[in-house]
Amino acid sequence: MKIGFIQTAPVFGEIKRNVDNASRRIALLDAELIVLPELFSTGYRFKGRKEALGLAEDAGEGYASTVLLEAAKAKKTHIVAGFAERKGSRVYNSAMLIGPKGLIGVYRKAHLFWDEKKIFDPGDTPLRVHDIGKARVGMMICFDWVFPEVCRTLALRGADIIAQPSNLVLPYCPAAMITRSIENRVYSITANRVGTEERKTGKALRFIGSSQIAAPDGTVLAAASKTRPGAASVEIDVKRARDKKITPMNDLFKDRRADLFDL
Image 1 (cartoon, helix red, strand yellow):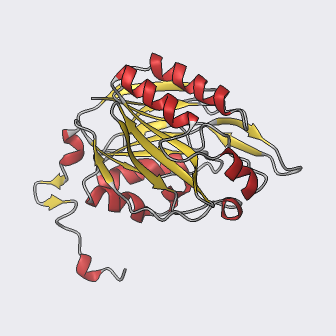
Image 2 (cartoon, rainbow, N blue to C red):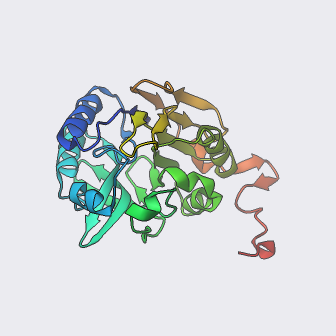
């Protein structure tokens, strides 16, 4: 199958503009699974919780969900996208998986980064894996990469591909996701954004781009610029992610000494 990412440069608060731009780029990308960045529709730098709630949408019901569903139907593809999710009086930094038939699943970011803790409620969704036909997909968001348990749990639950919508500002994640792919023998798709947001004086955030697709052996199959929007897709062999043999005598999961882990 073909998998891909779209690296964007959203304008804060311009939901229609950001979503329509992503939709146009989805239409041009040849891929059966496409990953968009974290908070792709709103931008990242909320001034407070009230602003985030005002720009958030209910999963499956807002403008971003509606447009992405239309795009998924037209392309017969699956899309993972990061968005601000409103659930009653709560607001989450979430990712949705949408297919041609509708909303498949939502993941709420478990590990909030920096000022996100002042804006969003902590994620409360389990780490689920979704079967989209040709592959099984798990979702994580940006700073979740720091916690190797996230990828390991998704891999143990059968994920072939880990989709990671991101708004990365730290430089370490692309290299770390290569390691996550190797240590779990899965494909990973990191979709980041570019540009700078300074909505609080003296607190500018510059996003590092560098979206990438990594293979189960750590090979980087596609990578984007550090400064410019872009997109890429590659053809993968899902069977590689299901072969957990490291040597004829070693199986990645069967050899785990869980009896020694103090978790």
